[in-house]
Image (cartoon, rainbow, N blue to C red; front, side, top):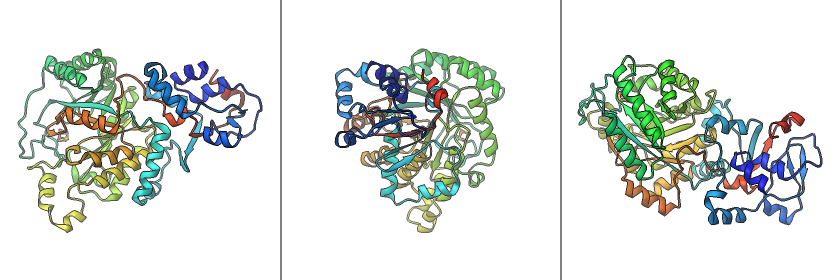
Length: 465
Ligand code: SF4
C-alpha cells in the first residue's frame, strides 16, 4: 500500500497499481487499469493493468474516504502542479469510462461532434458531464481566484461588451496603473479570504512599449508569487519576449479570451483580429505559461457560435489549462449592454441571443466544455451575481471547478467573499491550495474508473520504473 500512496502522490495511479501488483500474466491486449471494487466482491473478475494481470482488488472507496478524513494532509493525493507533468503522467492513456460514460482527451474534435454533445437533452448532457468530471477531478475541490483591475478604463479597443472602452459612455472613469504596494495589499486580502490565484487585469490593447508599466507589473508578479499565490495576468496582446519575462518573474497563467467563435467575433470587436488573439495565446504557451482562454455568453451569438468557440479551444495543440465561461454583465452605455436592455420583453431580440443568459445556457456551455476538454479547469466567471446558489450548483454539477471571488470582477459587481464562503459550506466544497496540483479523482483512486492504455510492452513498463 505504501507503493500506492507514494506513486499516487506523484500523480500516477497506474504506476501505483503496477508497483503494488507485480506482473504475473502478460496479455497482448491493452486493457483496464481497474474495475470497481463492488464488482470484484460479487464477481472475482481480474484486474488488468496494461499487459499485466492481478487478482488483488484496488482499495475500496470507503476506506479511501475514511483515510482522508483521518489524516487529510497525508492521504489527499494530488497530481503534479505543472500541467505538462500532469499530462505526461497520462501520455499512454487512451480513454476512460465510468458508469457507462466514455471519455478521452482528444484534439481532433469536429465541430459537428461538439454540436452533437452541446445539443444533447439537458438531463443527458448533465449526467455525462458530471460523470466525466468525476472521472478526472475531485468534484469537491473548487479553486477560488480573485481578479483585480490594476489599470482601469481608457482603453482604445472597441469590444462591444466592455465598460472600459473609450468608445462607450459608461460609468467607468479611467484611472492610472495601481502602485505595486496597493496591488500586494489587495493580494494579501484575497489570500486571507481563501483565494489561491490572483489575477491582474489592465485595460489596454497590448503591452507594446509600456516599459515603465511593464516593469511595475513584473514587480507585482514577483511580489504576488512570493506570497505563495498563483499569479495570472490579463494584459492584452503580448509578444514572445514579454511572455518570457513574465514567466521568469513567476507568472503562473495568462488570460486571453477568444470571447466567441471566429465567425461572430467581427460583430463584437473590430480593432483586433481573432488571429491576433491566437498569436498571443501561442506566445504564452511557448513561454511555458499556462493558458487561460475562454469566452462570454450573451454577445448576440448563436448556439453554433458557442460550439465554434469550444471547437477552437478543444482543437488547440494543448487544451488550455483553464477555460473561463462568462455570462455577459450588461453595462449601460456599451453597445451590447444597451441592446440587452432594449431586448427585455422583445422575443425577436431574445431569439437573436441579445438578452440575459440563463442558468441553463451556462450549464450547457460548461458541460460541453467539460466533456470535450476533460482535464481543463473550467472557471465559472463573470455573471455569477445574477444566478442563485441553486443555479450555480447546476454549473458545478456540469463540471465547473473554479470561481472568481471578491466583490468586484474588474469593474462589475460579484458575490462577496462571505457569500461565497457560505456557498462553499452549503455545497461541501473546499478550495484548492495554491501551487498544488489538483486532487486525484476519488473515483480514480478507488478504482471505479476504467482506464484504457496503449500496450507498450517493455517500453511502457520502463516509463513507470
Ligand atoms: S475588453 Fe480589454 S481590450 Fe476590450 S475594450 Fe475592454 S479593456 Fe479594452
